[in-house]
Length: 122
Image (cartoon, rainbow, N blue to C red; front, side, top):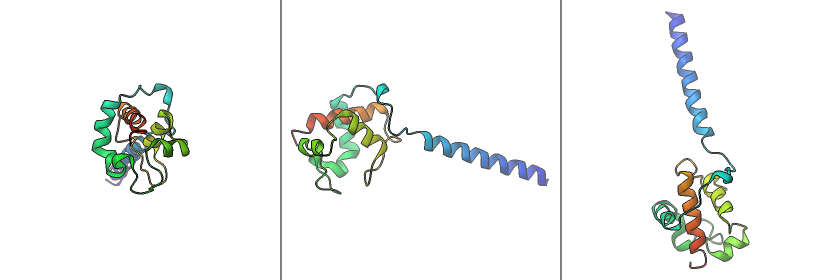
């Protein structure tokens, strides 16, 4: 009976570790940008409106007011490129959470396309 219990507990521990390591490994940071799809700004507007707008309404930033999504700020902080935005959204940085587990690569590329399209309009 003790051996059976030990085997069952070992199985549970190994199963839990396997699931945990898959969740941790799910986001590659920095992402492999060679395989990212080309973004669609219209589709990105939908994703942005559903999640990003909570902190970035009208291209602003409610946490770090100077780090907006406006073109001048993106250029100042070397973020005015799809590569930079995709990496930031996927991996997060500082107070910006990572969204690489919540969104697909296509959704992230779409958000980057939308942000770049809107940057000089905000």
